[in-house]
Image 1: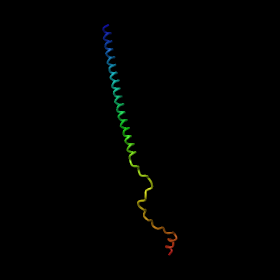
Image 2: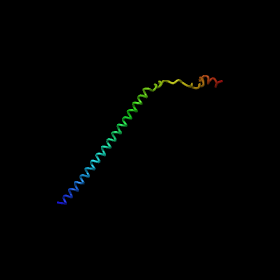
Image 3: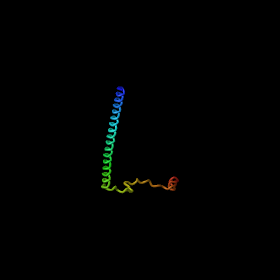
Image 4: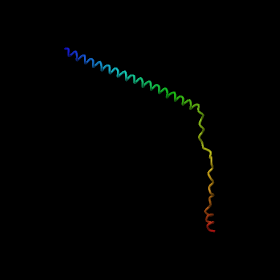
Amino acid sequence: MPETRVVNEGRQARLARLADAAAQGRSEAEAEARRVEENTLRLRALRLAKEAADREAAANAPPKPARGRKAAAKKTPARAKAIKVEELNAEDDG
């Protein structure tokens, strides 16, 4: 009988250690989940604040000028005057 008691005590001690390890693992996982959730909420609040500031800045910004045809800044250089073929032939003839 004493051997059975020792085996049972060892078994109970092992089960207690496993239960403690499982409880510690759960608490660590819950702490990590809380940390992630808090960080998510913080980042969401920052994003929403930035988006609101961007919308306000866009509303207060002066309107962009209308995009239309631009006036020609420079005129293209004058081309050489075209000469009719008859005139070229007349010069060659005589």
